Amino acid sequence: MAGAAERPATGHAVILRVDPASPVPPYEQIRSQVATMIATGVLPKGHRLPTIRQLAADLGLAGGTVARAYRELEQAGLIVSRGRHGTSVAAGNTTRRRDRERAVIQAASAFAAQAAQAGVDPRAALDRALEAFKA
Amino acid sequence: MSYGSDLLSTLIGFIPGAGMLVWGLVRALVPPSQRALTRWAARYGLHLSDVNRSLISRNLQRTRSLQMAGAGVGWIATGVFVTGTGQFVPLFGVPLMIAIAGYLLGAVIAEASFLRQLGAQTGVRSAALTPRGLLDYVPRLTVWALRGLPVVLVVLAVLYALVPKHAETPSDVSAPLVLAASALLVAVAFAVDRLLQAIVARPQPAINAELMAADDAIRASSIHALSGAGVGLVLVGIGAVLFALQYSSTDDPLRAWLGYPATLAILLALLSWIRLGHPRTWRVRRSGPLLGTP
Image 1: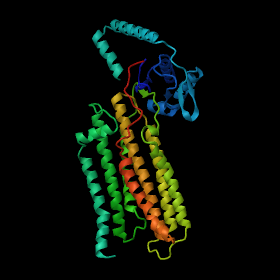
Image 2 (image 1 turned 180 degrees about the vertical axis):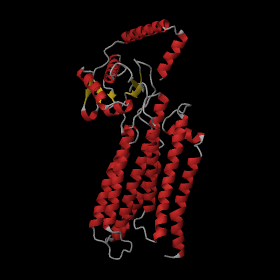
Image 3 (image 1 turned 45 degrees about the vertical axis):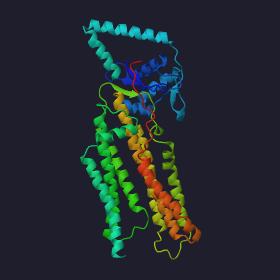
Image 4 (image 1 turned 90 degrees about the vertical axis):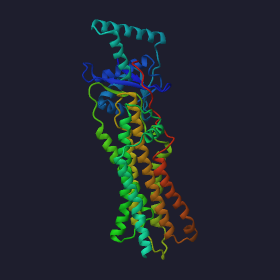
């Protein structure tokens, strides 16, 4: 899953990506990315999320799409909407640092295996990975 | 009116405006220097790079030239009106007011032309999960001033309409004119407020960190220019109504005293236009470096 950016504590920005060509509906892409970011601690408890209108405008999506993703996240107890005060992360990080590192190692292993199966040179694959970080 | 005062009126009516217009045209033709770019970037805490330098340079060239040319045309317009019609412009500060209005119009045109450059995102779309608010780009005092000063202006205009007028004042301004001009300025302040909200809400694709930071800086720059000019315009209005009150008041102590707040309002208007619109210390409060995939 692609993502990157800004945490209040460290000044980093968290980026959400939506691929309209993906078979996964856009609202589900948003929901799953935000849920993962909350679970892995990238979005800490209390982190304010953009308004539905802002996120929809930035992503070039309909407001209803973002609203549905937010609604499902709220129903799951991951985020909370407080009217004029906006929407923020309700649940804290539930995953330990060691578990998060293990998840990254597993993802890296899967990436390496996929690159090898596709016949991509490891250095070229690493370059692609670095480009993805910068994007 | 004597030849000397005619000449003085013409000089006041045209020379500053012509200077601003020429300056605006020069800025349209000559790209900003490296030093100017660096200074502008430093004001907004922006790191200039090969990725964002040309974007910033083009934006700075366009906005500065349009703002300055707008101010020049506005200033000259008053002189053309007075010279062409031979009519006296009743409210003090009108050339400054129209100049700020012209600057404001130039800033709006620059903003609109920047919006035209932004294409819709194609392929994978990206956005920062960070909320944007007006206070991320402009001090709270500015927002309060933009919303509170129009109330002061309306109160003063109503007061002007109600108080008895001095019978011998030669430059007495009609109450309907003051009320209409005040209503217009309030409408402009409201429109500027809405425009600021629209600029904040403008889509911000998160293509990469440097372009995002540049976009935030440009956004902040537009908001500063528009809010500074908007507040300045209302302050000139307040100053003009205070001067009108001073000239028409039947109360001698009030006549002696009202000139001070009126002058202060005009000076604050200039300060707002020049400094509030181009702060040296206020930086964008939201952007940060991008991180990798979580």
